[in-house]
Image 1 (cartoon, helix red, strand yellow):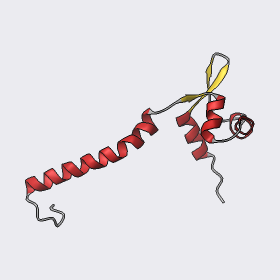
Image 2 (cartoon, helix red, strand yellow; image 1 turned 30 degrees about the vertical axis):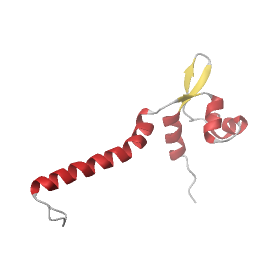
Image 3 (cartoon, helix red, strand yellow; image 1 turned 135 degrees about the vertical axis):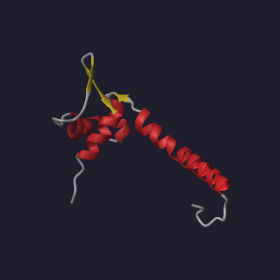
Image 4 (tube, one colour; image 1 turned 135 degrees about the horizontal axis):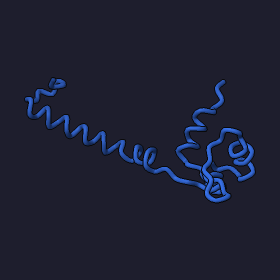
Length: 94
């Protein structure tokens, strides 16, 4: 497999390793943020992240029966990853 580049086997392997390295470097920040960058947010942080008021975040998110939260003492906290998943699953389709 030389991809039409007229490379010998060793050059092709080197080329593929470099390309894979570039691809990994390009997608790593996205994967890191999505998988490892999970954040536990307060109600205010959730509202700020969604760019809505706390009143709107209460009505449209927090007070929905299946909205995900984690209790820290007596306060609800919200995992960013779980909120993204919930939003993905509750999109309106027209």
